[in-house]
Image (cartoon, rainbow, N blue to C red; front, side, top):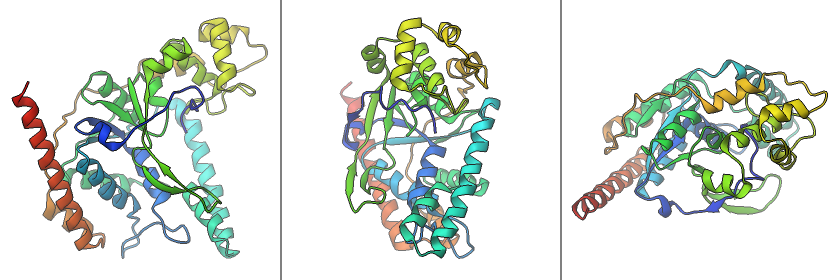
Length: 344
């Protein structure tokens, strides 16, 4: 879920060509869930191989990543580690929501309501251990770097962006801003034509760039105050937030009282289920690592073909063409990098 800060953040539409040649740290779990949710059949069923193993996430990972490489983007996928203890409530809430969605999905199928079935199927997506392992293996074969975060993937991606090892963090959630990422890109993995829920209307989804400094300057607040706003409206570590407080009201409270401690002192009869100072420290001092390498190379064509086509029943012809496209993309990036080094 993440903190709902869309009303306060300035979004700038960009194209993939705008970030050509740049390294982007991508929130892997967030992205894989998008693939599981969106890449489905008519009745909302995910793609599967002959053994019944779900492959929607592998399909998205191959074809979407190849588009990145073809555009000259250098992606690095960051995987979540052990979540903070405070996230336990949100994890339980998500599991319950998926169970409810499963029951509604079965009912919709029984009643022949295909569109409802698709909606509930998206909500019940579950990323299993074998899917994560398969995704990491495919990335290795594609020669795309992936990093195992010690805790929150967005925190690690933000850390890498702060260090300038990558140009931006990519995620649908706004938490990367709370972790200090100077630049956040949304919609990177869902760029393209999308149908609006329950409507026969399609919209063009484009990547959006959000810059932390611009957000803070426009709101005239500090990052710590932005974190206070997030805690008031709800984060993954206190999903419910404070009843009756939305982004605009939270901003008013921050402007009036200055910091989280003063806000809490002036809120009458409000009890946090989780210590807000502990939540604040998760964002200010997250668990991250410097033990990573960022190297991009041409894909292992035979390895990818064996894994996807022989093990998971992908179309050999389509995968082959995609890998050829990736190889050409890397060649162009290498030429551009060589020219840049020559003239600097």
